[in-house]
Amino acid sequence: MSAKSNYSKNYSKSENSEVIGVLKHHIAEKKPARVYLFFGTEPFLIDYYTSEIKKIIVGKDTNGLNLTVFENKVDIKNIIDACDTFPVFADKKLVLVKNSQLFRKGKGANDSDAVSGEEEESGNKNQEILKDYIPQIPESTCLLFIENNVDKRLSVYKSVAKHGLAAEFNRLRSSELVPWVMKGFRSFKKTVSPDAAQYLVAASEPDMYTLKNEILKICSYVGKRNEITLDDIKTLATPTIKSVIFDLLDAVAQRNSARALCLLDDMLAIKEPEQKILAMLAKQTGELLKMKILLDKGASQTRIEEYFQGKHPYALKIMMQQARAMDEKYLRNLLQACMEADTGSKKGLIDLKLALEVILSNINS
Image (spheres, rainbow, N blue to C red):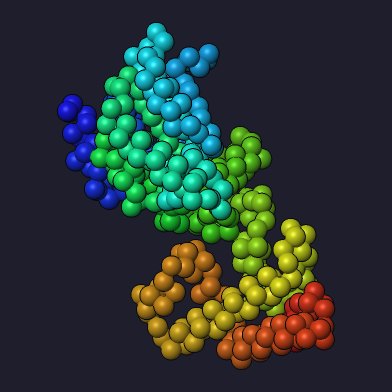
């Protein structure tokens, strides 16, 4: 066994972060393994590392002579034939297999939810064939699987982990996304404060493609100006219910019904259902009430962070500011109004949009 194979084997049972570390080493050394399996909930990272592997192996081969791609229903024999074919005027070729379902129990190469016994047996046979073939993949081939569904208990998965790398790419935590966002702005020679980056992460959908698009849009808008401000991000970022609810509760804290009604219109404009808006308003009001009680009791920052474990740091900071601006009775009355609106709408006594407008119209009374 080669030194490279030993290196992969040593990490086959390591934590996923260590596995990704090995993958980065392969890329830095331009020595890809013979087999990879990429899966998880963050497509940006999967696409990024797939692209890096392609650059190493295919390079500027615009004719695709050394790249073979299979998608969805795949005949395992075709995959093996492609792997066994020698590269053309190159040392290595890439066989890229997307969503084969070969790593999903009882599915094989069929991605239908309902499979017959015959199809399941065929799938299991394909998995066995692949498992047995993986140790025999030629050194001149890199076989890369990108899968939507993976069962880590399967022997074919364990074979990839033993002879190559099985890397899971899931969505990053907010603590990881904030520095990534700041780095993204720096790549455009822009600076952004941690608070502004935290707001963008907290207010956006937590996937890297969405955040990348927001960074591109904001940088394009500000032009040659170097500094990205919090106001820039609040003005330019695509509105989501999370971002608007931050501002809505600010208006509620200030008892600014006109502003609150405008923000309600903003949420309806982005097609958020009235029921979802009411549910989020009630949920956030309830959390603010808990925060208010903790603050009034003199709870420490550590105690508050423990109580709201998992809450984004920026969102927690805003909650504390909002809770300090409201009294407990005001929050209890607002929460009661939300509950009554929910009950009334479900009984058909009031239109939900009208109920929301009534609640927000009364906040300054």
